[in-house]
Image 1: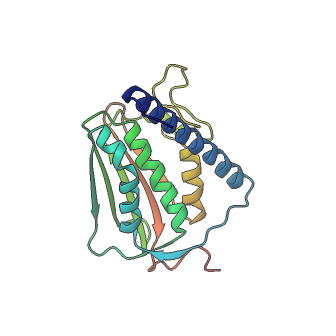
Image 2: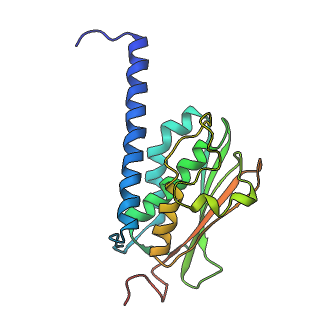
Image 3: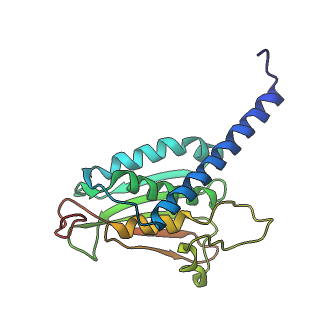
Length: 207
């Protein structure tokens, strides 16, 4: 189509980025609709959590570089394989890491950790932690509700459907797990959720 100027290249990249954001929002709405209609099922398999985290890191690499964010992963040495729906686990972690990137200032830090859960034998606890803007304690429950936005003003910097965490909670609960947040305004956030491992006696779908 001919030579493309630097200014045109920048405009094209902006269009592509906006299109991907819109596609992501549409997919999130459709996922919510399927989940809300109770037609979503889990298909548990055995898989390595490190493989999922590595894939999400690769997908997020350009955003991490753009904001000069440090991304760290710490997995317990004795971590067993997960017994869960891989795609839905990937979706939950993608949402949590994406939120951490969005709400962490340039030069900040994001860390993903996983270890055996102290709540349930045979289960794992996964944490996505950042040193971003944090969340007021009074909003901790509200952010997991459908279409929830802590800041609903039209001028807010971070845009989304308000469905991401509601879907994440639904996917975690389908496995019999829990998801929660530990955060204070201005002091970063830690999102934690539990998943069954191959050692769990109460694995999803066992019945």
